[in-house]
Image (tube, helix red, strand yellow):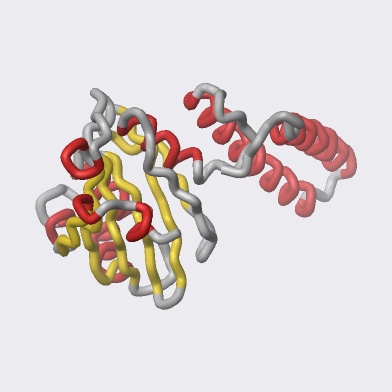
Length: 219
């Protein structure tokens, strides 16, 4: 279901935001400025989720959630530019990226208004967002959980879910690195040791990804 159907008209903003607002007023290097200019076509502030627009109470940590539509010049998500946008705006932001017929979504896990970790969907992978909740912090957590693919129970603590996702990503990166080392390694003894480590890391990953039969991940 599209965002237009999920959110009330009162939440619509549809306001164009000049890219220069982010890279001219902040001390960014040439590389980041170039990313804004060469990768981003247009930034539109599409929706504002707040007490006044969707009738859901704010919390100390989440007072508003913004939704930005970023039209791209190529099928590439400008992650360095996103960090500047997130650091410049003291609210949580859900991004919708578009390039021709391709669409992707992204959001950062913000703590004390600082982006710590990013989550992105695959291109043209539908996400069933749920913007209902007892408060905006619950809504924000539900948005982030919709990006997480590791198994979890809805009753699980949010911090626990995020930590598990981090562990899985770290192990996946370690496994890839070890596999590359094995391919390049010439010494047999070293290759045997690397294979032992690889087997252990894969076992750890399997344990983290093990699906509880009572666990519903159809979120």
